[in-house]
Length: 569
Image (tube, rainbow, N blue to C red; front, side):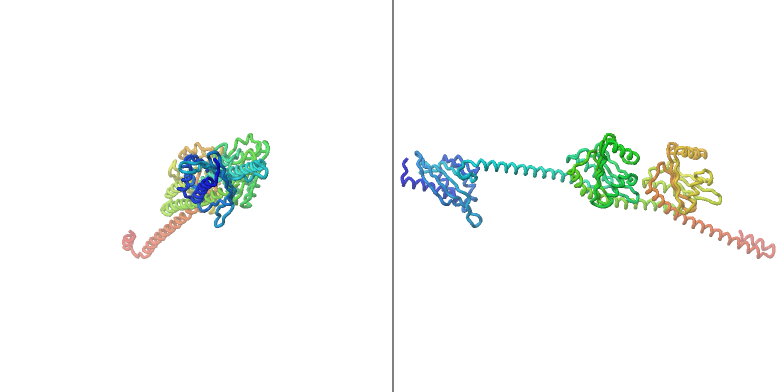
């Protein structure tokens, strides 16, 4: 087909109508320029169509982005016949509206085929392309630049991968910390500190920390030289609460001294070599701590402690931790601090509840003692004392006793109560047994004296034989016991005390002393009242005697005797 001026004008009219309607979003006009077999390949990945409907659909989707915001400038257009078709080539600059200013976007090359139909010229194929800005003059492909960009892309991917791995790791750590934090917030009693230790250990294992031996605490009691150790042993899957002495070994003393310097202090102790580990294990066997059998074959043991002042969080491992693992464990310190504050709140609440419980028990003994009217009722006080001590946790208790002494006669009366035998009242001599004689000497030495006697081995056998020889009621618990402990506090004119099958700690001794104080006050009051009543009775008798004496002195003859006898009777 020969291109004429008239033919060129017809083709360009349709071509410009195509692009004008496209730029203005005039879908109806745009659709009128398209052939029913319209094909389109544009400059974007989504700009592909195989039908007239595809072209219309594409324009509808682009209206908001195109209309009034895109212009084709510096247009260079040529028409080339291609058999029965017309090819329109165009090169131009694309400008876009950037705010209020028009900015150059890119150069573009467009090839458009039109063909004659019964209704005129129609666009049946349109292709657009943007020049590759990476290609330099004289190049077809920017191979070097692409290679460089590929390297940069690989580096970017590596960096992004590392970033994602770090973020995932951080997320794992935060999840682990949150689990510990959740348990800390839900603590209801001090023993829940064991859950904190166990959870930290389990979460460290999930985070990749291997060969953990135990996670533990050190809640210091400086006056006693001990710390309360809540601990979880990973390989044994066991928890323990132990009051541990830190003053009997140089390693323990050094660790405690470092921790007690204050918050932020760190103590790391390395025990290297099988012999050194066994030496440490042998020391532990002489203490009250859990004996870790895995140390029999261990070649190293490392302790890591982190101080919060009066408390520390620690971990021991069979192989040393890496720097990263140490840093990871230290992150649990803040969460543990939350648990410790919760622990202190619980401890305070428990102490207040315990004190209220003790006061209630003391009041029961006080009331019983103040209501006493005769000595025999001392057994009632022994019974109340026994039951209240049991209620307060004296599980090792055998009996409770009150002894009232008579130094002039060298005798005393033992008032006794036990749940096995019941109440008993027994008069005894000071020298009936050397141990009793020694106890009385201690008790009578001062008004606030204390006496402790322990029977074990041969001494216990001798004591059992002595009790049997006196025909005392048999207490099966004594018969089967391997030890017997007696604790007495002076009440001035006697003593109050208990006997147990195991030793009681300092806290229970102090509690027994408080009961002594309550009873001693009430008993002194009883003695004062009894003495006042005795004095009143004596005064009453003296008054009666004086009346008799006066009447007898006033008699003058025998007839007055009858009157005297009547007045006396």
